[in-house]
Length: 198
Image (cartoon, rainbow, N blue to C red):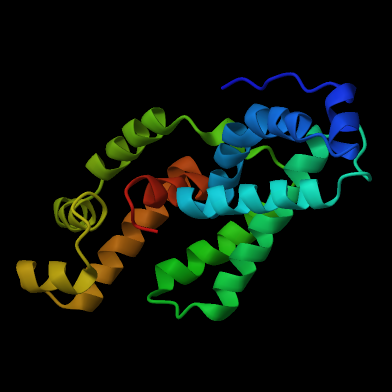
């Protein structure tokens, strides 16, 4: 993923109201910023909306922009992602303890200054997670595979396997704890994002 080089003349052009300069900035940064936002909000559609909002604000702020603009764009996206996560935290009905835990960690991660793009080795993550799941007890591994890979709810797994939903939740929590212990908390978050569990 490469960025188109944005020079000072482009920023001066935006400040002067040149749509061609704005288009150059948009085309040069849009995809990059969408990936950047996705690492925070874990939702590609929401990430695109956030990035578009940032560009609307850039255009509305023309005349006040300064060069270089790279860090300003990243900070603007990060701040809007943080606002989005905090809104979810206060507005959304949390469905289960895992979602609550993930939202809390998501907010904490977004508030940090770390570069999230360094964590995007998804295929390697999948491979490492698979090895951790293989190391679980047979029943725990079975339950977690159904939860993660097949998208089954704890209740559906309980009904299918003839066990209590609380037992299923314990297996899922144990598996998540093992993954976070072996690979780190962010790996657990990315894992659920990759498999559509967020």
